[in-house]
Length: 404
Ligand code: PLP
Image (tube, rainbow, N blue to C red):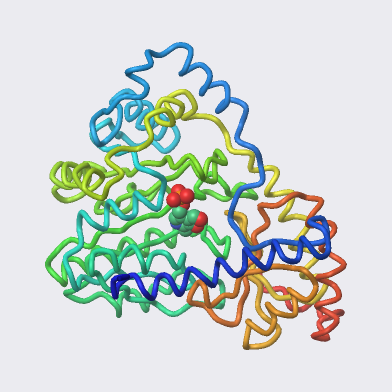
C-alpha cells in the first residue's frame, strides 16, 4: 500500500522515533532528572510574554470572522507589510508586501520554494553537515541533492568544491547560517565569496542559480556575531525564515519566505510560490499566528539563555578533552567522536544516560550533535557523566582537543 517513495522515509523516521522512545525508557528507569536528553532542537526557553499578550489581544480586539477566515495564499497584506518594514529597519533592505510570503514554518517554506523552482532531475547543492530533511524536501519534487563533503577544519562552506559542483543541472544551493548542526555563523567575507562563485556559475551554465538561505536560527547569534542579510550580496536569493526557534513557537508553524525584487522573474516566482503554498495543501500560513506576528515582529529572542548554556557546556567539554568548534549561533555543539564509528560513542553516551544525535544524521559521520536548548540545570547535572565518558576514552587532561 505504501508508495515506493515513502518506504525509505518511514525507515529513517523510525531511527528518530527510537531515540525518543529510548529517552522515555531511560526516564522511566532512572527518573527524568537523571536523563540528559540533548537530542532534539525543541527550544526550552518559553515563548516571550509578548506572544501570549498578542494572542489575547488579537482574539479580543480583532473581528473573529476576519481572524479565522481565509485570506490571500501569501498571507495577510498588513502582516507582510509589518514583516517587510521590520527587515528593512534591521537590515537596510527595501522589501514590501510583494516580497514576503507567509509560510507554515521553515519546513513548509523550503517545500514551497523548491516546488516553485525545481524540475525533475534538477540538482540542489548542500554543504555537509546539513539538516537531513533537505534531502526529503528536494526529493518531493524529484530533484537531486548534490552534497559537498564536510570541511571539518572549521565547518565553513567549502567554496572550492562549490565551484566544482556547479553544472548545467544545478538549480539551487542551500545554505544555513547560523548552522544546524555545527553552530557556525558564515561571516560576510564567506557570503561575498559564495556570491561571486554563484554569479560566475550561473553565467557559465546560462540560467539562474537560486541561493536558498534557510534561516530559522538567524536571531540566535552570540559574541556580537553578525549574520549577513544574504539578499544584499546575491540577487537570486530566497530567504526562508521561521519563528520556531527565535520565538519558541515550533508547534505553531509560522514563518515566511523573502522573494526579493532582484530575483530573476521575481513577480512570477512570487505568484508561483503562492500557488505552491496552496497546492501543497497548507493553503496559507496559520491565520491567528500571522495576526500575532504582526504585533511581535520586533520582539527579541531570548538569546542570553542559550548563550549561558553554551558558556557552561562548551568549556566543560573542552576541559574534559573533547574536540569541538566553539559555536557562535543556533543551539548546537558538533563534537568530534573520540572513535571514528560515532554510533559506538553515541551508545557509550547513552549508557551514561546522555542522548545525542549521530553526525551521520547530518551526513557527517565521526561527530555527534548536542542540542543545548535544554535547562541550565540539565547541563549542570550532565557534566559529571560527560566527564566519565571522557575518562573512558582517555581524553581527560588532553585539553588540546580545542579546535577554534
Ligand atoms: N531548517 C533547519 C536547519 C532546521 O534546523 C529546522 C528545524 O529544526 C527547520 C529548517 C525546520 O524549522 P520549522 O520548525 O520552522 O519548520
